[in-house]
Image 1 (spheres, rainbow, N blue to C red):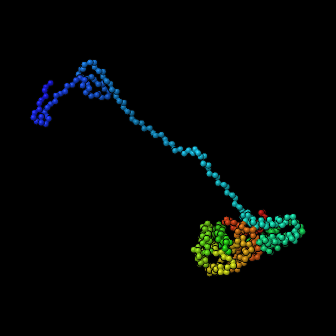
Image 2: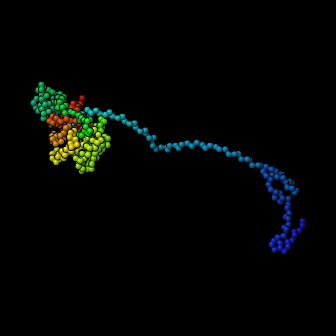
Image 3: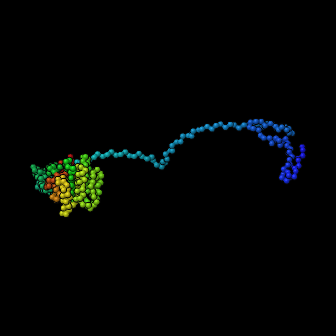
Length: 408
């Protein structure tokens, strides 16, 4: 092995030019320095022999080729289960709607409405004729009972005469007296039982509604409007009771419920001017019926009655034949006072027909018989409740049987 060349001056200064001696390599180091053979190949022994026995070749297994991945579809997702109700029972199904009760006939409602009147009369009548012959004292008691029922003196006298005819000093049953009462009442009411007739030639047919405070004018107007609308007539409502804001709002509500036009002004407005405007609007629209509400007034207040006369004059300036009907609404609970109302309103406003309300709230329903016998003014409607159908055209025979307490 040759010696290494010594570097010159430049090499010594900068570290170049010296060749390092080659390192000696032993057989064992050669074996270790050999790079490993590729996979699955046999590594041969070292080229230079070494002392001792030769090592056996080492076999390195080849790595397996990975299989391509397989796409597995995801499992189906079940819908979320309903939350358990461990502490509560399953909700019960909604109850079936109850069958609608059959609507009562008008005669049935009338009988119920006049129950207080018929019961008050019937209880006393039963006590009067129980185990008792028909004598003068009995007839006098019967006449007093009829007068107390507000049937009027003339009607009471006629009924007593019918009962006494051919039966004096004989027995008579309670049912016989009820039958005679129904016949006499019907005979006096038949001539005045007339419907409100709307003249189709008049556009509009004007109905002025009058009455004292609390008689039910506004409600009666609403119920009549509902009836006329069911008959296919067009209706306009005039809120002529400008003294009460509640009356104006109430009439607006009835207008919405019945599909009727409403003419209204703020509280305190002039009633005559409002009626004038309402008539013009109804004429321009070709409305069939114009129903005019008025302020409630006591029949003994002269200044208020004079104001009502002014309203009528304003209407007649536009149509000399109007109002075509003046409907007086009477409260049955006022009893004998209703006779005076008919007289004064008839003189001041020219009442042409009656509507009696609140017969279900009094035992004095017989006052209608006394009014019919004395004034002979047509009775168009009677009311026995708050419902729309509780106001109906007056039928004399039905009323007579109901007030006598005859169910059939």
